[in-house]
Image 1 (cartoon, one colour):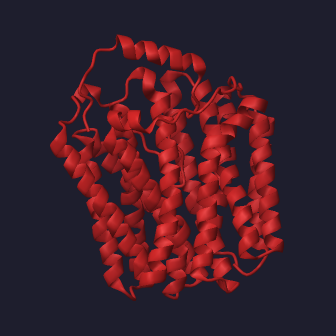
Image 2: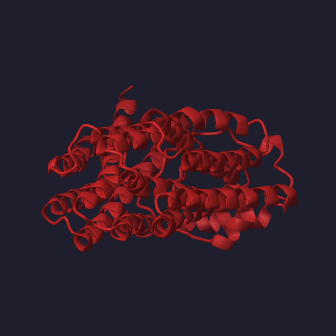
Length: 426
């Protein structure tokens, strides 16, 4: 029981961070719109946050290696707190671009620190339960953060104070934890060609999921503003994304355990196309219908990531897990960076409908790619498939440890030399 209490300190710290993250994803576009910023300017700030996430994926390991997990988490939280407080003093696009980039870096770095910490110290027989609690706490907190914005005025200093307070509060359980700290990581390994050979669908699915999820989180509020929703109504639609993720991800994961996961992936991608088209043609839909459709969209889109990473995991040899997870992480973050830029351009050219046309294009192309892979290769044998594990809604990090140890690289090279060649599937 005491060990679980120690583990809970890390889970609670990350949940506090996620709540602030969910709140700010809704708040930033609304606040900039109230300040008179153009859609292009808002898109640039949203993209800056995604760029910060990408940089956090790549570079946060250096500080963790230098000072350890507890000190690194504390430093990231302090920088995030300072960045949020500075945002309250200068509501300008250039200043917010820099500060949101810092926020994206810190939020992702804190998640990586906590996630890799738990992966390292948890034993195999209960790691699955711990990580499920970790991801569930993160997902629920994202939704709660969006709901906070439905009760807070966007034109006041309150959102800044709440977000800064959540950043600061996350340090408390970490500072008081008695959970064992793992050895410092060595480096991150990104090998696109190698991972594509292992699992084309898993790698492309990570990009598509990042592009869909982060675009909705960052640009979705811009759509709500454009069609005349209030700040409170926008917050409800954003919260519905996380509720839909909780409701839909497990059933689709259960189904993917009983068939070739690619069938589930292509089905989910096609359904994203259908729901996006439904929202596009719904026009002046009632708020209740819009919340329902957003929840359905969120559950389907986020499930693409979860099932795609499970599909990649099925095809990964023991010595290759870290390389695969590191590469998937960076590809997801790249999609999270490029997607908002393209969607903002689509809104500028086509109006509010542009975001749904973007979603239809991304989901449709991905569905076509998965269908092509189904024709190219047979699925894995049932014995090769591991049980499905739910993962958090975007923005999120893959469940594997993203750090690559030098000794692991040598061991993996030996494993690859000794392992017989096999057709790993799509």
